[in-house]
Length: 48
Image (cartoon, rainbow, N blue to C red; front, side):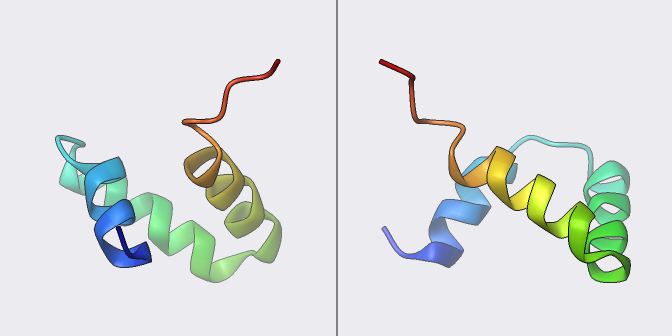
């Protein structure tokens, strides 16, 4: 699965208005981008 497909799958079923707000905040603040990316990128990873 490529990065775009992974992002689409992660956001599937989410409220479009909230998703737009998330990406707006990510563009405005590098720290918000890091936090949002980390949460999405590692959501499937379980700690051992």
